[in-house]
Length: 353
Ligand SMILES: Nc1ncnc2c1ncn2[C@@H]1O[C@H](COP(=O)(O)OP(=O)(O)OP(=O)(O)O)[C@@H](O)[C@H]1O
Ligand SMILES: [Mg+2]
Image (tube, helix red, strand yellow):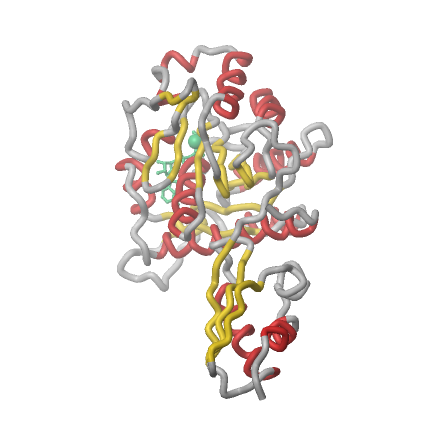
């Protein structure tokens, strides 16, 4: 019996995307089917390079072709990706597919650290990523990338973001002295944020991460109106004081006047793991707070990040986390889960590209 493209596609129509709950052929994720003798190859185009179910989908494709077409076949799916977009109206930032705000009610819970490590991890997984420092009054993105004192250039009247490890970066910290920005009034701060969306050459990006200042005040309302945010991630630590502020932040985004979707909750500084005994976990600030909030508001708990020296050291020196470390692995899971929630939201509203 000769193997046909039609037979291969029919077999693959038995494989569902576990999140979008439709089969891969209907979702138009199967391309370039090539049959050469006993060998079948095809591209599987996922909705994000950070897809946590990549291996599972790959195995399901191999099994389906062998089961329905021929068990002697050598099946080689080539896993590719094209990030879906949440944005219909693209007056500003036309090349940016998803804009994700990282927020928290309480200060100092690790928002900027989470924003930077999410950006780094998504970029390592193959996505094109930018980061916009929306913390006009306390910009920490330059330090977290080790770019203090550098200035962005200009091309054709637009600002060029600085780049580090493939990530495009803009912060008020590159333009003015920190002490200067701190005395700005609200309108100046929000006009600066606006310019970062209109006057910066961001180009094409899968994910633009927006690091917000702490709190739930006026500046947050303004940013939510100035920047066409696709959704937010809310960072908390496990202590009750942080959780109370986290609830405020959740309620702020859910407020009908703001109405920014929430992709999920990140619990930072969840537990301490000694470097010489990674199996041990100490819950220094309590346990399960992030999970409780996620359940209360029916939101996904995107990840739990341990408290380790490496995070603070890398933050201060502007370096990336060591691949394979406990905390880096936690970020790989977090980035995958966030990318997955973004793809689910985009898939639900039926927007692709
Ligand atoms: N998981 C972690 N383990 C160890 N240290 C951490 C962790 N997360 C954050 N930190 C440290 O905590 C401090 C505060 O982090 P960060 O500046 O990211 O918080 P923030 O919420 O952005 O603060 P702000 O509200 O001032 O913007 C930093 O010194 C950072 O290195
Ligand atoms: Mg910060």
